[in-house]
Length: 394
Image (cartoon, rainbow, N blue to C red; front, side):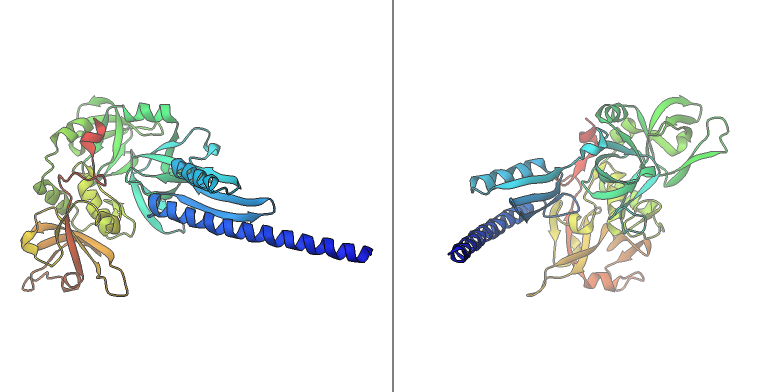
């Protein structure tokens, strides 16, 4: 009798466990589908948005784990699951991390900080950020910080590349008078001995102005270092912004000033540029922040051409190249250059150089002409992917 009762109890326990496991599995599938649906909407591009959330089975039910810098999206997910009657334990970490203790802002502290795809020097160079750039800080991993740049790019920087700040400190930096370095490359010098270098500088570097001296600006770096910069190599930032013409001629002049700068995968400074880093730099030095990568830039601006009718193009237009779509494969944008007129475009390929679409020209670029996809116009276009620095400052 006791044996029979034990057998019945055991069977009932198994049935309960099967029902529970079945319920958990069904709810896990529903939860996973909701996560993917929300991620597809709010974070389709992991380079600019973070929504790394998953659901695990737990003895007590389901558990949501992961991290995101999109709190509203996380709240929407939880609301949807509750509405469906799904019980869960919430262990999603919202960024910025509380471990930063309020220092969720930073300013790039060196001429060109190398931003990596993972928190280690051996990781891929994802992009660069120039001295004086304000960034958001999301979390820390030993001596590395996950940051988000003004073009929304997410990448890791080592501690030496940034000066951490809280909201108040960043506000003080942001509202201070600044100069912008306009030479392609140069140096800041010691206050006492102007032959001693304090730091190198690249075009676009921003520094706080302390005072003006004869022939020099006395400046302050984000970490408090003081230095001198020649007035011939820099301009008052506000005056520089006001003087920008936002025209194609200026874009072409800027692009040609970088002729011969070496190709660097991930580079966005005058030390080295990849193809999209080059076009990004051209536009930045003319008062516009555009998306980082070619595959992102192609979504900005106004469509101009997709059939290689180069007569439609204006100076400053961006040309995109890559793999054309087929019945079985999607289009893939892998290269970008800028139109400079006379059947020519300028781009970073081995180095910054000029190529032609004219078959009879000595610099005809058959390889890129054969993989041409389309042209977009960004200059003076009203697009949420394009940021005008003059408007942004105001």
